[in-house]
Length: 287
Image (cartoon, rainbow, N blue to C red; front, side, top):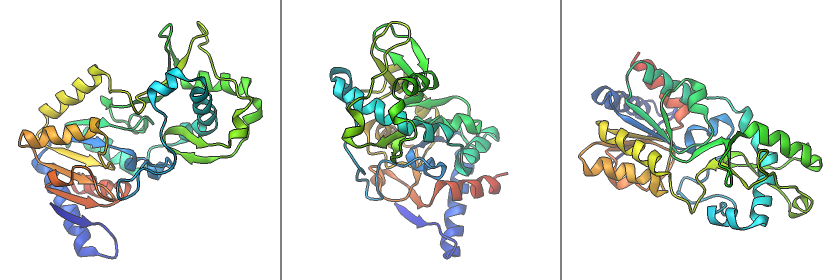
């Protein structure tokens, strides 16, 4: 694997990285893009892992624990009430916009994202496969009604005025780090329709990607001639399997990512660069 850094103080290396990415997209106009948290950090949304692929912060919520334990749901919804508004206000950055432009010019063939923030759609990308769901939706586990996250946020704020204006350290996917004392009087939201248990419309750790979504991502990979990973360490299997599928079918795999990935041994090359910096330049080269 070739590994190139992209930095203004290293013009030769930077130019080579740009040329290599542009040539990759020119050779493979049907390339599938697989994006992760690194594409959204420039929009103010923290990522999960450091450059070594090690998870930051607290252990994530496990899906089975969320559904079994009231205390886990209380902690999740309290933190989400405080953290979600920051995510809801986030706007697409130049990386998202460049991907949408490349798609409009038929320079890429498809888009699969691990992100739940909806920023690709806001940027104008169509037919986005969201492997891990959307944080902007909520589903009732009892009557299966789907609600908007905005509706549930209004309910949370009515029922928990003590947390209005609370400040907390932002965490990935609309989470926020609260003190235990802030959870004591928190009211967990119930389904507005049936009073049942609500869960965000996302794939928690410990849960599997829905079969239909996984099949859609697989179909896109099989139809593509190459795979470009953007802003992801692909440490979770739902994304790594696409890298492995590409490699096993003889399709080249490349990456734009700051730090190591689980698929480093499969990559033709990796450009260590912020996606919001390099993608607009590549898009301009292909205009």
